[in-house]
Length: 341
Ligand code: ATP
Image 1: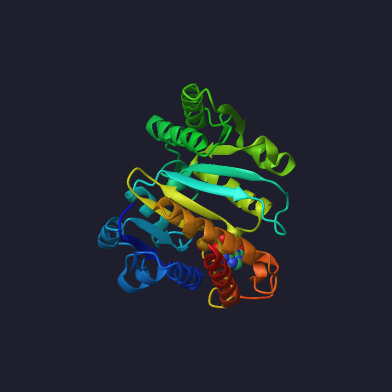
Image 2: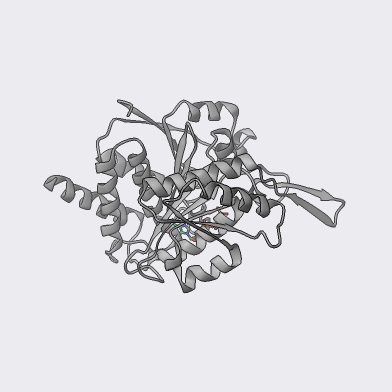
């Protein structure tokens, strides 16, 4: 663990700056040896200087130990810029996206769900390799490589082993996408034989979308390709709580970046009612990653306790409060817990 941890802080667009300032406030309260380095990328940077993210931004990010990131807008359509998030994931080699989903009392559609979704982060349809042929035909290319499949599948099995998980389910659509999903499935079978202590099965993505609602207990760790992972994550966020309270870690061999799973929520930006819980829980994952596991647990517990108080919670989770009241409640809970530890 480094003595001082340099954290690249990317506020992002939409509600990003609001939830980031709330999250940095709770991190400051923990009085850890953090140095925050602010990096402004995304829509405003693009409007100001014609580039949503530059090589210099990436150098600054790479000079830090970890990254805490708010949502960054990716405009729809041609003539704009490519996803900043996808660029950072690629440049930093953040190949694994880890998204833990556990039912939150009072918010979950289905109780007792406890599933970790591991999503391949660097290739697949989500890379957005697309072309127009004339005006009326569009082509998208789905690149799937053995190397990236092996890396993410091994990551999933190692994750299961390290975290006392019992089973890994590989999710695909190999009956239709015989080459791309076929390769993913082939590698999944091979890698699974190296982990006799972890159960393995596989399933079609559409059946999984259904089973997550009907019998979620059949899943433990799910590993899947980029776009399927993106979609199933939102479903799992809805099942276990709400989009505003789900967190994720993007992990590579050298770097790691932590973020909420939601987008920029332009419909509520600037209104002071954005839910900072997802980013705060991502910050808790970050604390764990850099070795502050006690503080990680404290922050997680404080957020969970605050989420039970309707008076302070934001409207998206049925609360009567706003970003500030929720943040104050998290700080109060932290203060109470820290005074008894
Ligand atoms: P993007 O294009 O950046 O993904 P989006 O609007 O398509 O943006 P989200 O930003 O994830 O997708 O928002 C989906 C819905 O969930 C919106 O109604 C938004 O207001 C709500 N939402 C998302 N995150 C939060 C949050 N942290 N707090 C409150 N509501 C949220």
